[in-house]
View 1 (cartoon, one colour):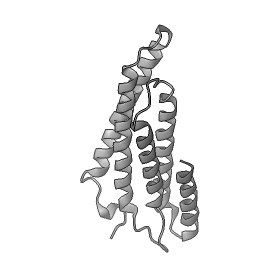
View 2 (cartoon, rainbow, N blue to C red; view 1 turned 90 degrees about the horizontal axis):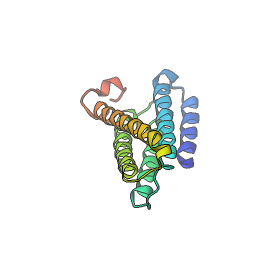
View 3 (cartoon, helix red, strand yellow; view 1 turned 45 degrees about the horizontal axis):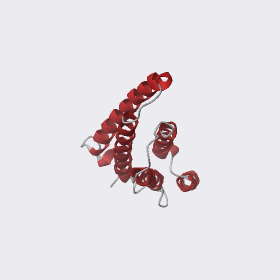
View 4 (cartoon, helix red, strand yellow; view 1 turned 180 degrees about the horizontal axis):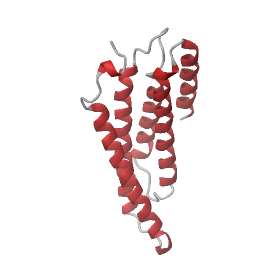
Length: 158
């Protein structure tokens, strides 16, 4: 994760020095930072509720999420005074949403399999409902970004 954040800082510095107007890249940079916050704040508090033995998903899914975050910022890297990979940013965000949705569903299934004390059962149920909403948002985001709604002319690709 720290490598992805370092990459974000590097890309941000390149963008500041590129001469490209911030109106072209700042929304994508802010959205990317938003995805980082949502991705890793949600999984950090959810991991406290998973009390089962770890399996392959506990290593592979966080790694894939970190890789898509790294790529998300890399797609914003300028080449001289243009941003040639901006249209690919949408594909990376869609992959990020797909992996995130799978990860959320996986964690929710493991939480449902666990028996919790009566004192925390209501909190667990509330958290599962918020996880369900997050997974649905990820599905919507993926469909929006992968669908034909995005035109190359909208993102400045040639």
